[in-house]
Length: 263
Image (tube, rainbow, N blue to C red):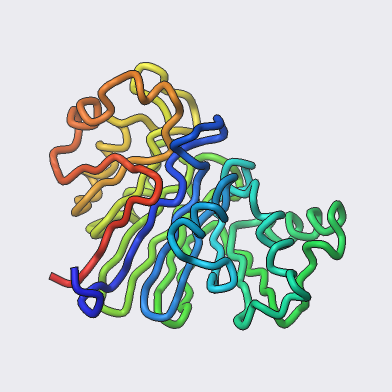
């Protein structure tokens, strides 16, 4: 695909969970649109995957956190620490950390433990706390929308729309909820967690067929399933999803790229 026709490039940095894996890092997605490089979630293994993708941490302008569980935030400490080397001079643009209710306290708590090692200078970091009700903010090259989803009290799903009008939605961790259907409506790409097979459904997470039902109701143009526990490797995830969803379907792999361009 020609670069000048691409509105948004999405790279799946981590398609796994908290379970250590040689093939799947924990949750992280890189979004590139216009001049912006945006990281969604920062689970263990994220910085290595960024390097494998040819991206430096200093180029990340925004870090969105869907919620505060360690498989989504576990490398945040290392990420901040690395941004201070050497003397923080390699970061030329401020880093904005954007998340739901409690991110300010979460960041303060980390600084109480790690002190100055992760405390970036005030002009190099912004902490933006989103409301649980629907939020819409303009981040220059993109429009960011968020809604609360059913997992943790701070859990958010994000919708990013590029300058040319292409959009994708990142579910974060969630159970079935109407708010996720609403924000995913007619999106070009729906990145949806599908943690466990249908027969192992647990509260607060989706399975392939439930994710498929949400995608079908939202009339998404393409569904990408991710956040796989090892049990997902033992069943036919695609077949389970096809019980409820008949559209374009992709199963995430680390470093997989998806290009979104105006039709």
